Structure formats: structure tokens, C-alpha cells
Image 1 (cartoon, rainbow, N blue to C red):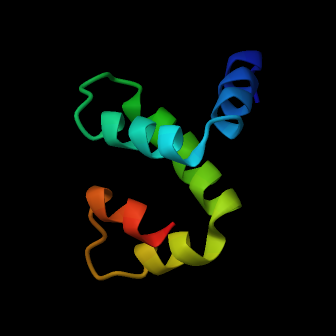
Image 2: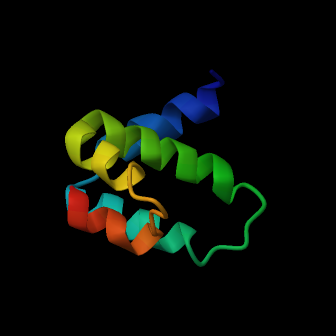
Image 3: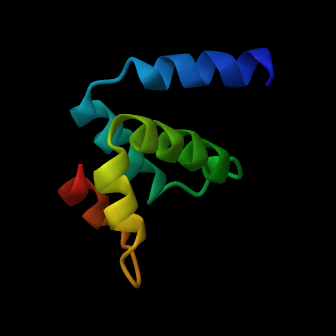
Length: 72
């Protein structure tokens, strides 16, 4: 893991639940080339903090981004 990634993950780990959801929602409208990487970091954090709800969301036939907040 690079220093930049470690710093980003540390910053994400300190976000409140509300801010974590907000950052997730921002990724759904971003057209940045690296948005997939950020989404992965956010998903890792959701899974770490809310494993049961996160896994229920993923188990949906077609999990929609905006539905994630209903499961955490």
C-alpha cells in the first residue's frame, strides 16, 4: 500500500457515518478517472464498520448505490 493510499484510508476511517455516506454519494456523480479506487476504499470502510448491513445490501439482486445508506 502506498503512502497516499494509507493516508486516504486513514482519513476515511475518521469520517462520521453521515460524512462517509456523503462521500459515497459524491462518488455516484463523479466522472474522475480514479473514482473507482475511492469507491473501493469507501466500500472497505462500510464493510469494516457495518458488516451485516453492508453484506445485506450486497446480497440484493441489483444493489443500488443510493440504497446503501438504508442498510447501515
